[in-house]
Image (tube, rainbow, N blue to C red; front, side, top):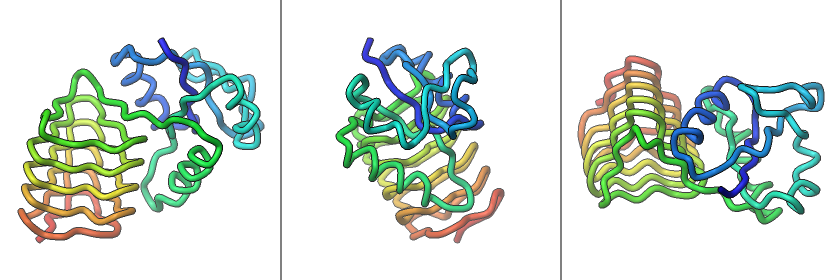
Length: 190
């Protein structure tokens, strides 16, 4: 198995660890977090450095994945994505074996599809996205770059979720509309 670095050691990291362990494609080499956390362990995996160490770590590790969550703003994830790409890291697509992704869908680099998410036919998901647990993205929907589709959310057919958006837990959209910005949990988006 190829080794992978996880960038960010908070709650979302724990969920990503579980997906990576289930997927069985990568061996987690370590986690990058803030300097004070170096030496700690998260679910048994060591925190081996901070953002300042990413260039040096690239000598040993070529694959990384952003495990910082996104609620109020995508800015940290966007900044990390740019830094990792500039250094040369590969950012894979991580797909839980407990999810369903249609063979007619496309999923961009650095995006994760969490447990029990359902991605239907002709869906296009951009890079650096989180499609969280039990989210449903219906046929012909487009999720642009740097979006977080939260737990239990429903993006109905043909809907376009614009770049950098946060789409809250249990939010549901009408079909064939454009959605952007911060969508509160439980919203009905018309």
